[in-house]
Image 1: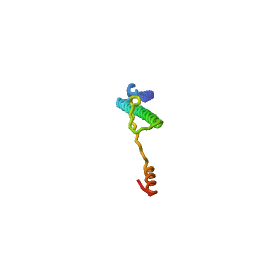
Image 2: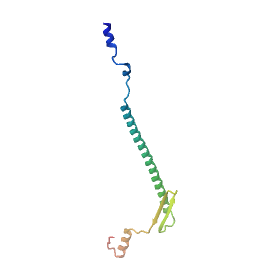
Image 3: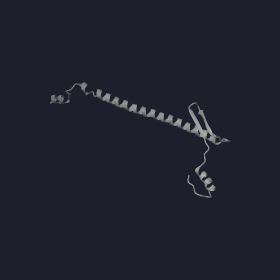
Image 4: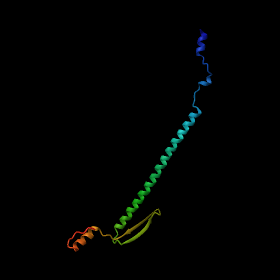
Length: 121
């Protein structure tokens, strides 16, 4: 009976086969998935940086435009014509001022002259 017990407890395969690990294909697939994931994360990060820079430039341009409009609005005299300039060698501006009369003002003048007749312009 001792012979039977020893045969059952003995492993018919060599001891080196019991060591399990990853196959080469599994390692290559894992590395490929890791590379794809890292590439996507880097692209998202660089896209965020690019959008942040564009937003900063847009905000700066809007601030310069607001500053220039306030400067024009606070002048003592506003003359017709065009004016150009630069801010920080990165932003150029151009303003044009023209005399403008609204249609309501024209309608009021014409109706007063023509004895309150209705004229649509």
